[in-house]
Image (tube, rainbow, N blue to C red):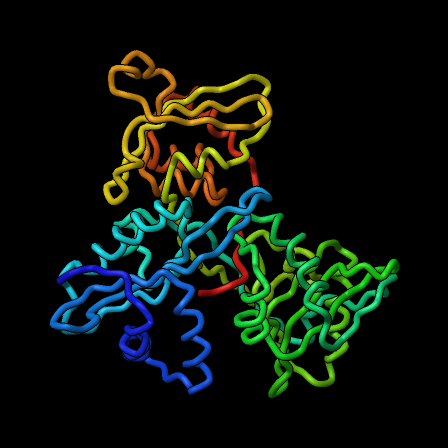
Length: 394
């Protein structure tokens, strides 16, 4: 058994494994499209008996975190032939992927788990959930007269990007989409119909991707930058009431749709979604915009990370008054007398806190971090409050 970077010569073998493991069949057009994507991805595989026995792909993305774009490695297409399972090969692939992402300066990694418990063993942790709504036509928001207009059709990509980028930067963990991702994912998967809400000044303030079929209005993606755009888009949807019986959509966990309805007793479900993992503590925190402080703070973070040993150890975190951070690893002799500002935690806990999904005080309450009250309160104040969301899948 050996782990190697796979090449285009391995493409057919990888696709055969994916089709078997994930139980799908690609068309010739899809095969060619994925061939182009495969060439751009970092693909690692385990070779055994002269063939690819297991593999995963590292997809290069950027993600918004507190309004900044971070390099992110998306782990995807993790698969093993059944005769090679239970040999620990995926664990070795994940460790190799972490080393590869660290070399490539991808300081954070996301993946969609088949099992949350499985990937937690290797340092990934839940960072985002979303709400799934189903409404009957009688439950839809009331129609409102708004000063702007909704234009249905095929808007220019620049219009959609203008709205999406402003919206996505409000959350942590959204993708900073490039044009290729819009083309090969968003336009193909979100719905063939699109409509954009423009305000009185003809500035786009929201949009919706959707399908109307079999009396169902299925929203693939809806974004609104303000209340006016929200009301305008929902009025547009409600104007289909003679054609439809129900509407389904996905929304961020902090969405207030139910609260804003006359009858909030609608069908809604909270779905745990993707996991995240800090690949490099040093690189990630050096980029991270902490909250402004009344005075500089210093905290010692003792990080446990079995599968990325470059993260293990005691780190001195300094946050300046403007939120700029510096961090460096300390030798044992350097921090023996500084236990008063010391926090012990696993890489999972550090990740979910810095992503904004869970707060330090919450994590202390459930025993996921240990430290003095002063140190935990300092970290609580240092991490800005911002929700998480992800509108995409890979």
